[in-house]
Length: 375
Ligand code: SF4
Ligand code: FES
Image (tube, rainbow, N blue to C red):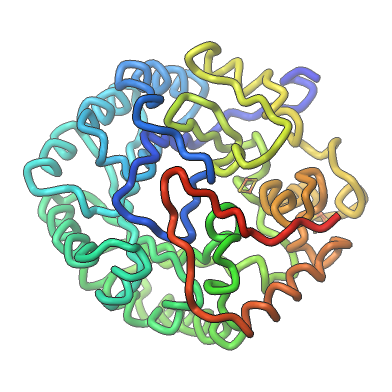
């Protein structure tokens, strides 16, 4: 099947995973279980070529991410490459490694926007969840640096059972730090988070209270703070259009140069992802089997095949379908029409009975005790 047959669109956004190194150890990390080592990372000049190719392909924004992207000493050079390629640059960071001198270098390189992740509003809890002592205090100081440079800030609050009750305080924190936007992002359960699902999945009552909090805050803070919020899959009737659909709007590049339809795709078996040391970004996007396998709707099984929503949610998330059913081509079990939907109800029950301990993300350690896929 060629690109034209599939109606290939131009991607809008590129997630550049500059490194998998990170001082934090969040138990819901979205990085793959098999992390790339520093010796495998692309150099700044290669990222520069990738950004130019991305811009030629139609990409508008690059998200500089990781791991922790500020662990790269050459980050100012990488930012300059993205800016000179004409891309809008968004730095997604935990903020804990950056002092005033370093941040001034990022600003001077032309950085457009910062997205700062927080683990909680309360320092002790935040440091426990991130597995990094003193991290919350460093984040607060980092936010001051962003404000002082006049760079727009989004606060990214990853929420789950162990911090969701403090969502009002997290919204207060966003205001205090001068963020113009806040993402209230429920944990997505694959990879590390799947291993920790029983400790992280919120209860229905928590979710309902959080949804009411967001609705109230949106009303009260209109014009001051924009809040993005998506209900977690485990309590939704239909899945989200993960990545806006496989190979439709988005691509990710891993630290070693693999091109991926989503940040978690390396967890899927049976794929050979193109590598940008060997192929161009355009070739990978338009012609690779990895991007074309789940592009469009022709690949879909029932019930998606005959469903009126198939061009809205694109069958949901391939990584979640694989994590829960063992087959990435299945309908996402988050869909109430999926024959595997009862797996989510079981997970909610299991979480209701679970203790609060979790396994931290570690290099070289695999969350091997993830729930067994269904047949
Ligand atoms: Fe979406 Fe497939 Fe469910 Fe229809 S059956 S709502 S296309 S996931
Ligand atoms: Fe990979 Fe949803 S996270 S397709």
